[in-house]
Amino acid sequence: MKAAVASLPLFALLCASAQAAPIVFEAEHANGIDAVFLIDEVRECSGGLCLTVPDDAAEPAGLTITGAKKNYVVNAEREGPYDAWFRVYWEHACANSFWLSVNAATQQKVTDTVYSRWHWLKGPAVRLKKGGNVLALSNREDGAFIDQIAFASRGELAAPPAGTLKPTVIPADPEGPAYNVFFQLPVRQRFVWDGRTSESSGELGSKVNLRGKPAGREVFIAPGLHADMAVWIRSNTLEEKTLTVMMNVPKHVAVQRPDADGKPFTVSVARGTPLSKIALRVSCTDTLPRDTRAMRIHLLEDSKVVASESVHVTRPFDWALCGPLPAEAPGQPDTSGVDTKAPWAGPVGGRAWVRPGPAEYLGPGGSVDVLRVLGKGTHTSALACTRVSAAKDGEYELLVENDDQIVVWMDGNILYRNKKEGPAGRSRTLVKTALTKGTHTILLRIFQTERHWEFKVAPVTPGITGQPFSRW
Image 1 (cartoon, one colour):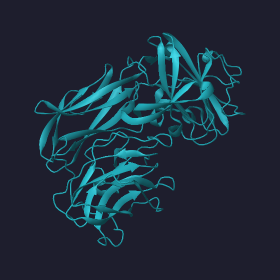
Image 2: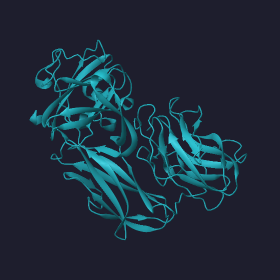
Image 3: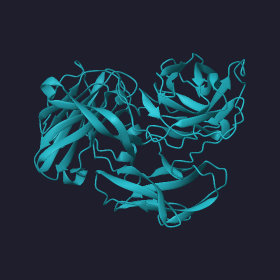
Image 4: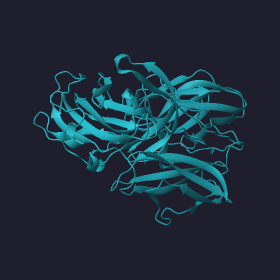
């Protein structure tokens, strides 16, 4: 199942025309969802859908995401105390909480210790005013899934319900946009971030821990490796409409639908239906450069654009790998027997270099899954290298993730080192480097303690393009 980390706000809007006892609505019926949140299809949920955050979507501890689009607004017929209830699923003890705030009050933690099954959780007592009340949920830990939300006057729900509840209201935002568009991507995705704060990292120069709001999602493709993607259309009007879907697709990329084949097509939104789903397949030709390009989708009503959203399409670098190799000192910059400027030129420690294709190594979030290529290992390491081209002289940023320790060299000089053991998502760091126009070699050593063994080094600044194996 999918999961989440850190404090990442979800926002949406709900208006109830009549007071229910209790007020019940679907968590996925948000009028606006930040990029970190996904609508997940889960059979055990009410309506087969819930709201969640994918594994490794969040950032190091202390990250705060702001700028979400809307909030749940719950209309109460009377002022007074209410119990907030949530139908949730936790995977384990580090995946059993999120934050709740009502009417901009201090966040309260929602948690319990019932694991591995869907259940109703009685959250904090809140006070609702007569009329509209703003509800904000913020994700806090990996593994939190939310199916339904209910507000009950004190004593209306004496015990947790046995299953799902019948929704009493459908979210609607009379003052907001008529439609919103949400991307639902496959496992191979990561998040593109804007808003950063810098900090010093000593001998390795300047690094930037990612802060700010998510600017969109990224999907990874390569020749022979497509990505199936869903687009959710959120109707705020709940009226029956026929909408036109248009896409700005990068050159060398194809977006196909069984009855549309990448061309503009229409989609029907049924009356009273908040969510409509469109299935798409994204693929590319061998001429797509190894970099990141934006793709936008537009929703039109009567030839007028009523909603737009973007997703970043990436063809990953070609990576050569060598290992498993000894790891006597994890995190130490050991290049014994390696030509750091042309490391692929010969074997290292009796091990030959292998050149897998993306279909063989691409892991969740666009990482290089070393385990899939080199096999299982404990307390070991591997070397990996690639060649990139810089379009011009200047300072560039690279996104680095590692599980476990990592050392990265650029043209033989140490660029970045992380001596901490842990999951890749929590190591996510932006590293700055000055490059001259032309070709450069990236070499890294990725260490392995046990279980997951992966890394990512990907461009953030435009102008860096990966070179194919044939040009090394």
